[in-house]
Image: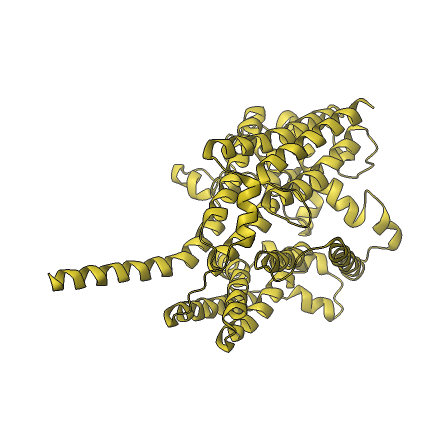
Length: 452
């Protein structure tokens, strides 16, 4: 009863703070903050923390903990994250004079500015060509394509998935930046241009980028990416005022999503109906317990078994300057608790709530400062995009971050320090237009000097 009371108080307080920071927490008007709360925190972390604290989780990962005191420590620290994260967001809002409800609603109503000049089209033709080549490059360097092997009846899909995602034979930067990152964003950009201009040339680009994007989401049989890509397009239709969500539509979309999850689990992982419906196994257990279980393992591992990393899991581009080899805490956790799976090649990393990696590096101080930092980071991204011009490029980037920031919240902390994928995508998409503007400025200055 004690844990339940604290859980309810913290849940209500967290929801209120998120609402004050986001402007709305309505499921019918999703935004980056509401998705972080509902998906990353409440579903993926907070529900499981209560079950674990009450010792009714019966989860195989939690059972590996040698000391049950971490059940309570994990619960209290997750409660801290639930409150401190939105409190940091609210502080940024007050500091910058951000009016969340008004500015978010104004953004939804704001017209989309579309540049239809020939140069803009040529830039996106070039980027589309790069995207296609990168997808082809990814396919070329795969020893086997898991989704094709599934259709052919292969029985070693788990190994193929790990091989495709973690043992990729080509350059991972090309795959991650241009295939996995750039192509889906281009599909949204070209859709906006096609919808707004009604011109065939833009629809042709969309019909090229869209199937490439779908393939790159499902090729390795990962279940999450295709759902997040679908969410991107739902947000895109909402932000363009093409559709409005209703509870009926949410129910239909949710039913379709659950049905697809059932199909994927049954055919890919061979999960039976009994296991599928258990709260601690199957997709439900994966969401509410497996995701947060790694956090408890981080707490125990870097309290009792291993010394703190002291920054060794920071981005390699930073610590590489000091000749320090990067060590990801999620990999160490997997190697410690599931060595057989790692050796067999069926397990990669044990990603979990960002606070786990923050703790692995600097203990409770890292957890405190890391939570404040992540809250400030997310709120700044939210405010910046709401105040930017509403054009196809910025809308698509906004939606990309709206969907991917919640994924990183339950993926690790160091990606919030320097996410080379995000930085590279922004540079690749924005730099051509910055270059064009600079050329225009130089030409105009040259004309003025000639006239003088």
